[in-house]
Image 1 (cartoon, rainbow, N blue to C red):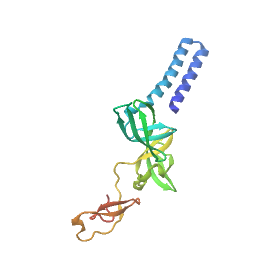
Image 2: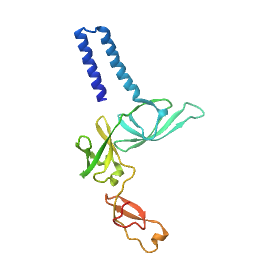
Image 3: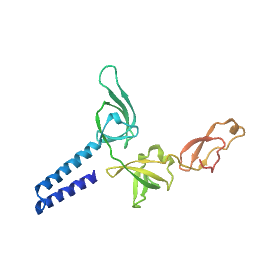
Image 4: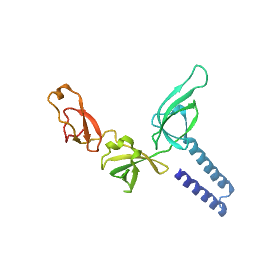
Length: 219
């Protein structure tokens, strides 16, 4: 949105300049004004999608909030109009709601920016992230990560999600390697029988591991 506003502003300034200089005349000015209007309308059109094209994980702008599509179902009853039943999760609060749309209804698709950053350390309830391009350090509320914060390791690279330059979430790697710092020793016979036991990882997360896993091992 900021980039579009800047482009529109420059077009307006350039149009005024041409009009005052009277080198090109009114026709070109009208063409540039038309470009300005088309540019804005094209952007608005691109940000709108049909609910028939919903996908899991897609982020929408609804009711002054950002909502991620958790699941959806196209329903075509024997009588009446078709509709789309969906389950949406608020990106910032975690609230989950069910919402029904008319088939073909247009909704606003949120334009998100992804930026790679490095997790440095935790300070209070904030996670301190460093932008790998500018090296700027930014605090991110830990609730933006949810339960994934349990698997966040210092110096780990993550994908930061931004909307209108505001951090709204963090995507962790699909796989992380962490050290087991506390787990009960395996008893004789347990490893042969299979099964699992609790283990505390270096980040504080508690997971279930096979009996043969010991302290100091990486999983």
